[in-house]
Image (cartoon, rainbow, N blue to C red; front, side, top):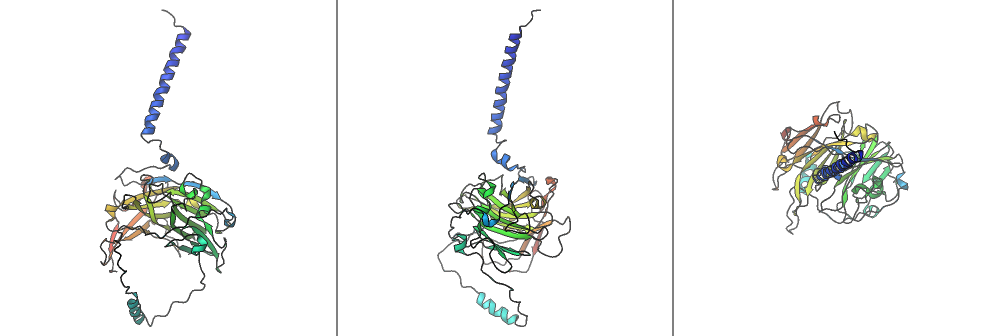
Length: 402
């Protein structure tokens, strides 16, 4: 038998190696084309649910980023002034140019005063003081979407552009003009709208702030939405800050960002509502797309890993979407929030309510829908919302008409 030369063998192996590399390059290119290695999936660490499966989506939140500066020493990043804007709603009312209807409130008030004449009056407030005004916030917006909450030592007020913190005597603690969301969330970085100054971009792309005090852990939670523009294609994010201590001014914050719906990145999350529960922070948002006219797509509901967030850990959110068809005439789900007294018992599921609100006005509303949300952060596939793969309500309650 003739012996092969070592040079021929080496040449053959080199050709095989080169051919293998070309094959691998081709496979990798196909994977990229198929979107398996999409930037969105890598950045978010999202585990998508199959459509119609009823399974949750696991979304990796951006962060945490530690922000340890006293809010009074943060660099000032101004907001862009807003303009008057219409609230997004599932059934927008047509604008006819006719004057608004005459309110019946005065008549109702006189009747109520007659009926309730013997009821003791509510005690007056212990303290009143002005919150943030338009000049201080730099937000020329109508409405300002003002929100606030009180803790043991502070009252925290938020508007579309800014945060202002007061002591219990009404004295501002983080400057006369407060802290803009652009400054507050800046350390999240330029890779997302929260850290890219798009809490106040041009056109205005911020708003619907929310703040609440977590009395279980003695922490504050401040949130705001951010995106490049709307109408537009996104991306759309919820920006979330969780204080490291009970001191919202100098105690430091953990900053996070959550994409509204990674499976549908063109959906904007409007009218977000947060709730404190024993096992999680809960978030609901109405989803709209820019379909000219704007189109309501459903409601997005998230459970955020509260235990991880208050300790500055990497955090996932478990989410579901209830589509418009399943909702019927309902939208704007409101999650139950623990405010005072004893905590919800361990294992008690979160519940959410929504009112049937038909498009035709002038009807008596008496239908309330309820959903239970069971969350399992250890095994997200065990998490459920409502009944069945379409998340129909667990209950439909008939109440007195209103």
